[in-house]
Length: 288
Image (tube, rainbow, N blue to C red; front, side):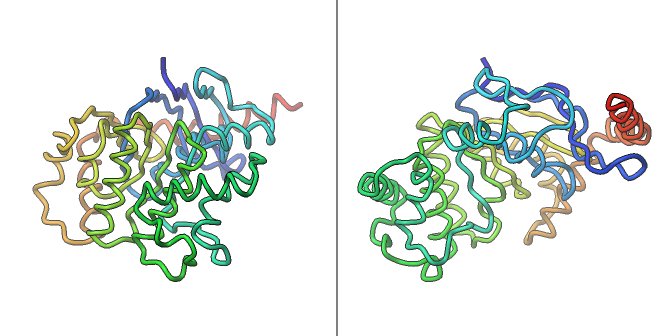
C-alpha cells in the first residue's frame, strides 16, 4: 500500500489564454520508508509537487491519497490537522523565528497540539539532543551557523513524529561540510523508517536516496530506483561527464539530463499547447 499516491494530478494557474500548467497529469506513488530525490531545472514543477504533497496547496484536477485517505478536497482546518500530524517540513532558508530561542523554535509545532509548556520543552530538548545541538538550546537563530540552523529546522520538523519529511533544497545554503552533516541526519531518519521527499539540484545527494524522480515542464519524465550510496545510472551517464564546481554547473548538468528524454519532452510541449484552454473552457462551462 502506498503512503502517497497521486493520480492524474494537475495544477493550473490563471484562466483562458493566460493559463499556466504547473503540473500536467502527474502520476506518482511513494511507499513508506522510501527516500525520494526529486530533480529537474527551475520551473519544472518540483516545488509545486512538494506543496501539493505537503497539503500547502490543492490540485486543480486529479486525486491525492495520503495513507489511504483521500485528501485533495479536505477543508482548511482538516488539511491543517493532517499536515500537523503527518508531515514535517525542512526549507532551504530554515524559516526559524528570530525572536524565539532554539528550544522555543523546535517546540513551536507542539503548541498547536495543545501540549503543556513543560512537555513541549522536554520533547524539543530531546530532539535537539538527537541532532547534536543540546548545548544551543538558549541561543537565538542569528547566533547559529548555517549548518546548525538547518539542524534546528530538522529537529523542529521531527518534533511531531511525522510520517513524512519534505525537504526542499535542504543543503542549498550550506557549505560542503554542513551539507554532509545535514544529509547524514536525513539518512539516519530514513534508516529509522522515515519517508523522505527531497528536492535537489545536486546529483551527489542522490547517493542518499533509494529513488530519483526527474521532472521537466510540470511532468515526470523519469523515475529510477537507486541503491544507497550510489548515483543512479542515468545521472552518471548524463552528468558525470561534466566537470561541476558550482551550482551553475549542477544546473547545466540537469539541462543535459533533459536531453535524455527528447521524445517525451516534445510530446509534452505539444500537448500543453492545447490542453490549458480546453481545461479552462470545461471549467467555465461547468459553472454555468
